[in-house]
Image 1 (tube, rainbow, N blue to C red):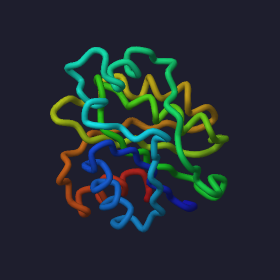
Image 2 (tube, one colour):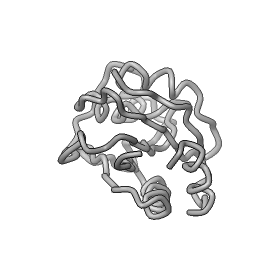
Image 3 (cartoon, rainbow, N blue to C red):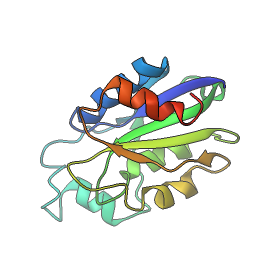
Image 4 (cartoon, rainbow, N blue to C red):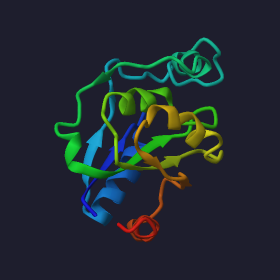
Length: 159
């Protein structure tokens, strides 16, 4: 098994903590997926149909701009992709992230945080953006999942 990356998007900090625990537990590099324009509380108001997140998630072709890149994506064989669940799927910023790179031969393993919903159609919606990669079934974790729990899960993928 080659190098492992944990790439994460966290709008409120919850997913960042989970991603950090996973990276520490498995000895992986950590990369934050930062939106070019940070999300405000108003942007994240899923009850407001005109909020930024609602507008983005209602248009599956929308690709929020990202600030920064993974310096040498070619060195990674496995990418754990961590994000919050929005509308039963990954936020479209995750599609933006994957579409920036040649993912041929890589394994992508999604993991998510959520206030209560499961992974929904996440894998199906991410697949077209992960061309050439093997996309594994994702899993939702509670925000306070322990490093040991995350490590045991990653071990199932040979990590």
